[in-house]
Image (cartoon, rainbow, N blue to C red; front, side, top):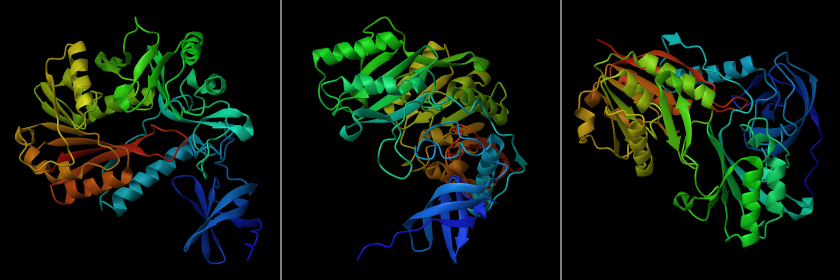
Length: 440
């Protein structure tokens, strides 16, 4: 039996989710309409049916919300890189702040004593790290380079990007043309982007070895656009610079407030937004309320993004990280910055058992910056650390809320303040910061 064709429908949007989907109640069933805002009357078409709700495509906005703005990107709505370009900046931040508040109250059963002003920066060309998908699409007669589509696994047919840091945002078409000339055009699935203050690196993941003419094309592209070109044949340890072959310093960024320069590899984790990262680090250090004699524990320290600035303001810092390569990088960065009071250890913070010596070393302050899964195992042992003040930087409000609930209800801390960090403008990603103080 042929599936009945779904006809367009009209409805009033009652509310909106944190990722920019409007919610309407139609014939007793919720319909999520991507790109619709609260209060709008819209025309939509259902695309997927679930038991308790349907997902729909926005066709027309019949009565727009005053919060609606014109999306800057030509492929917004199709590209999965952004979901909130149609919402004003102030409303985006209000949505994210409410998401954080709701998670803290619903999951953690806690509320902040003070709500901090959002940490914000420029909304455009901010993304210094990205992974671009690549595919040779015969039907389009070109190689597609970009982010995946929002509702499908296909690569968006795009020609530029408004959020990628310059000059990469303007290199989508040149990259398509470059790869289209290669003998391995069908064997190059992705490009890693790394934009530093002293250079731009592109890491081409290749499944087959490039030919000598391919190598010449890569090098000419790097020379023409002033880029560092790397090839990756396997895991991260196979990344090797192809152009230029020598005479360049490592990629780096600075934190001028703390007179710190941090070097990193093109596939290393660094915070996406350099402008917001500088402000975030400054706020975290300020919220810790450091004194010169304080000893600080920096958990999930990475390459030293927080550790090195903390070392400038305290007696000593110990950074703990589960990735040995990142620990080595943090040590090298401390040495380059002549910071003899910063030490680093490698430990899997998801598998500690409470016997670790650093847990009982008498820390005055703790900084946490975990992955999306949060810091549940560390939080479990926080009474042994016994720090008077904790700053928690989070990239997932749900796990922050879970961990905050334990700190407050079981370990005698109060949630003194919290607020969002708008690290990813125009997306639904909610980064936040919270400060906990020990009740006396």
